[in-house]
Image (cartoon, rainbow over all chains, first blue to last red; front, side, top):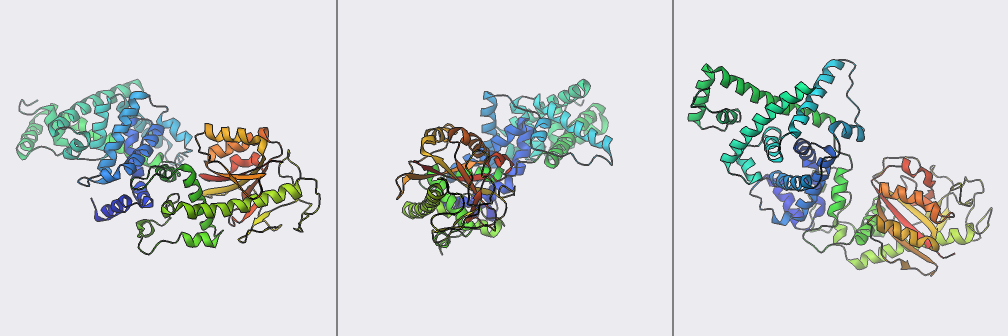
Length: 186
Length: 325
């Protein structure tokens, strides 16, 4: 963890709640992106991210600082996501969310065909990801989206490194199968 | 596939997580075994697809702009290292913060200057000030109470002036000598015509009118907004019920010098405030609503509640004045 981050956390623990905003601004986009892949529903990802930040803040005096703040935050997020996922299914698709947040598509006039292809590809990857079990989706997101090594994944998921390795392999195998299936269905 | 090299090893090879010995084994297998190469390519394709997906989402799906402020608002009630602050206290404190920003009350502003021994990293590292939670949370309740009381007294006095001098049939001037403007537009189609275009809440607590105002209800990108609503005491149960049902905390109102007037504050999310304004007419057809007029928050201008949904701002502060007519 950087000295700057350690200082910020020290300030927060000391009662300076406003300092927490620095961490929120620093990590919110990264966490949101990752959670969209892990959860599949942007609305849900947003809710989980918000809940995770609030929980991290309320528990920050228990943060031991032997991992990065983001790793700790992500572990909180995954736990929240798993807990929520048991209770309800995603509410909307990526496309619906983009409409809800008022996303204006990038100018397609120059290469409309390519734009549509790329968008379709992203949707297919998302669809295939959502066919994975929670445990497989989580681990592959940590590896491929968060770019974490096995040791860090092991720490977040509380799994032995050997299990991380074998589970990642199974997740990849299944994702490969799902991607082929999604492409065929399209 | 080479018996010494398993698919799991190829997966770990993609991740660079193999020992040097196993890496050499996999590289040897890849050199001669087409099935191993095919598996490697499929795993690399997955990596490429996911990386693309991540970039695509980052570029095309963004978090709502108010996400940070929502988180900071949420943590206002979950402060980890000091006693919890009730929502009502928080509302008042935040309200004072807003007044500081608008230089509405220099005395309050001075109270909120940082203590010499305090260090605020956000001031050094973030260009924008933290919007919702700051050192005010640590200020003493007595200080907050006194400042709040002054604010409420000012608003209630203004409300009383409106009620007593404006709503009872005056058509051209106010009895207390304040200038009147008979040419103003209606506050709402349903309410009585108001002769006062702008009610000034001055620093000294006195009221006056101003006709050189900005037009009310112009949508702006303000992060927060302030409104005053004057309703009959008979509508109070419905108002209380509305905020309670929406999980807001309402404290018992202060009884001011005029026992017929009471004031309470609500720090509302935008969508709840809009709903509140939509309901107001049902509860009290003669309600009056005012809003801050933008850059200069010391001026309250009549507010057409039917246009509430056109206004932006994450956090709306409502001063609700009830009057026993």
